[in-house]
Image (cartoon, rainbow, N blue to C red; front, side):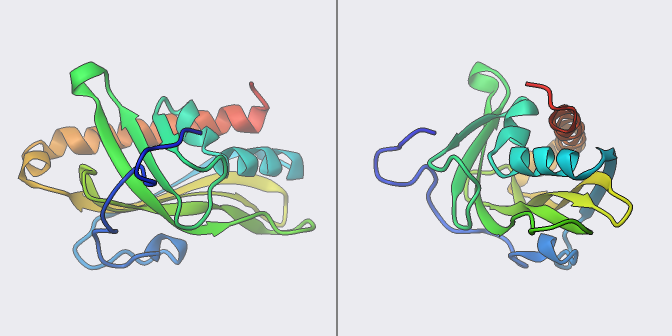
Length: 185
């Protein structure tokens, strides 16, 4: 956790339609949507480990992102700036948490996770959500839902590269979730 002068690590407001849509699975018109599901293991212990990792920014950190936020845990309204790349080639991606779901008491089918949306300065406009799910049989899966469009002409011109980067970071999230599921430090 790091504190930032001026009280906020990112300025401006959410910059896309359909705020909170990743929680219910309906992307706004004109925004391509990606949904990825990955099997992580079985049982409530696996579910709890992954939920804890998602709700403490550990999933982002394990995916190789540099994470700056004023909150150790994910809470609605929290702002975070994730960065990837090196030196002058680093891209910062400011976001704000728009919904959070914590693990429910007891066993049974449920999910935990959060969704965050883009703020000015992010290369995309849209929302992404990270959820761990456990079904009635105890099967644990990671679900990533994202809808977005390029934020400006620069990123639109590099569209294929930007989409390849999105697929790459999604694969890194999946690997991070597998580490969390396995209890790796």
